[in-house]
Length: 378
Ligand code: PHE
Image (cartoon, rainbow, N blue to C red; front, side, top):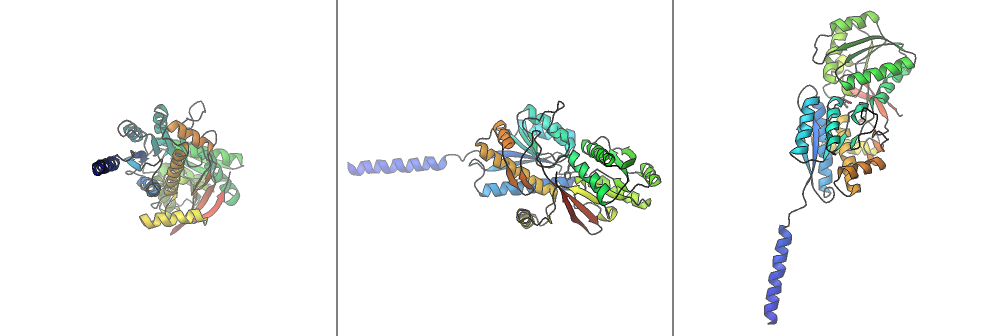
């Protein structure tokens, strides 16, 4: 009898163990990465994806978030409004994603933010700097939309102040693509700050995305002979304008914003110029150097600002989900509003408009390298 019950007990124990072993692992937590992986600014997308994936890999190695593995859903949203909106709709409806890291470009992040808001999905853009990304028409913060970078009123002011104080510039020419929220915004914020500081914008000319011949507007720059030529566009367009300006003998110091940050920036054409950016890989703080080392070991290249901020955006998101204790985007957003998040680009807290307070760096371009010049804090 005793033998038999022992046998039954043994069978029960074995069965129970088998059932426990078959119990499905907790469902993976899906996170979308929306970035331009093709087109004119594809280096932005590659860096953003790689930075975010590095963070995901590290969290998964520690057991994931809320005990669940993180699974990335990567979409090529092209830094354009329409493809970004379709990518956002796709990841929300098909993949049932509740968290989006992206987009890179403001022009694409603005429509994504509307979709995220309507679906109560949490969006954190690593690098979209236009104010409208996180704020609606009435000036209120979109409840579940955040960013990991500073905004363009600050970036434009830092550039204008540098031009006035460090370069002793009195006059500037500004060339802009009016159809791009980021470019137009940054151009206006630069102009306002430059004129407020006593400078004069002597040329203000627009062009259209895809233009390849800038001679007509550059002729106006040549005639006005300004101290600074401000080009607040992405590297692909800046490369073309800068080369043509040089050919025409324009001597103004070229300046720009974070859009210049690319291994494909034409350093020969923009040499002697400066741009504002989010981070420098030459920053000696241990947290920066540790990140540079890990990124370089995995990908074989030095991380640019896009990689650093995507890494930060992903880490802020996972810390907030972990602290919220649930994968509910509204709860996670409330946690983000209240918390402090220590990441590569600093200790981040969000203001009422869901923008972090952060310093900017100024980088100097020479024919063979881009080097750190200075840091400006708000
Ligand atoms: N700030 C740019 C935008 O809002 C995107 C960008 C960030 C590009 C950083 C390059 C580097 O559109």
